[in-house]
Image (tube, rainbow over all chains, first blue to last red):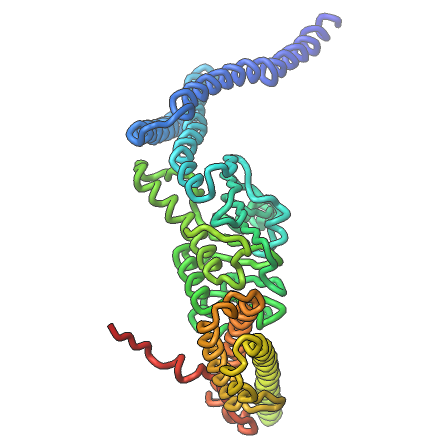
Length: 354
Length: 180
């Protein structure tokens, strides 16, 4: 009896416990420790090579091309290694565990390569930041603060009224500096909400993440009150008590909301409306503007992060530099237009010319 | 049965037409209220500009009494002025502002006076407010007048008259000519 209990209860339990410790503790700690160590070493080498001092464009271009093709090779090769054993197992029908094991190993290797490829995308973003940060310092001041993981504070986004129905805020590449004497904050922002949807076919419910907004966000804090009542300019939407401006083209593109119509007409001069229309056209029709007390907030939708190098096209440093300038210029162009309206937005202190 | 259906359909159609007519009438009335608001905005901006100009005239008088003597009592601004009358008053204010600036050019002390410069800033601010008020008023007038001439709204708007626009002065509307 004791022998039975030992072999059929105690031994299996001990094996299960051992397996659990192996899978949950030993393998992850060994694997992740090694992976972390390797990653740290690679990061240190990258920092020494690229972040410790000025780097030539040619060197950045070369590194970006290497990273781009390496990422693609890892992803394609990883995908092939993952799909091939799956196809083999499906086509083989009945298989013994010993036959199955090599395929499992190959598949795991494939998944590993895909993970490595995805993790390596971080490097191309770091390289893109290497090009963009000098441009940012040139535009927003040499002493501007840059945080690659930061974003516009949640409370400022919430106060703007430029996006509703969102739950989570994430973002990257936060910049705090000044533009022509006006303190500004700038970052990529992604606003999402989670919806629970029911599938009537499978009778199961799943959470879906809905992207409400993704793009650039700029906050400019002026040293005087801009508007008597909050003024919001959003993409054209039906319903609501929006103000009709005199420009039919502007009304087709935007809806203007303000408790005081005179304020809307005072701020939105014909020239300023033209500028907003141009910004909107360049952003494929997703730009939003809010004037409240002493601040202006601009949100311009974009499918690509500012410092993203692009996934399908081999990187070109000169073209990327041009794109960064163009995209930041779209937002600062609105500020230029405002600062030209001296009585409303100009500071008592003398501002520098652009 | 057939007659009942026909009567029911006719009543339903008549009800729909009545609801539509009420909505259109209310739209006309809402626009009239908005025009009234724009109209009072024009009044406020004109009054502000008039007051600032009057103060400016007083300051100028301290430095150049003789030159500005003839400027006084030229502009008449009162309640209930029609839009063309207000346009005329606005034009007179433009003339006066230009003439005061000419006087200031002849008197450096006046030009450099802090009060005078503040008033100049005030006039520019008042002019921008007047522009905004004019555009708001005209946008509402345009929406109303367009509705008034568009069929079938024109049939329900026969009791209303089109409103006059507050137009920019002829000098500002004219093409810019440049002689080199």
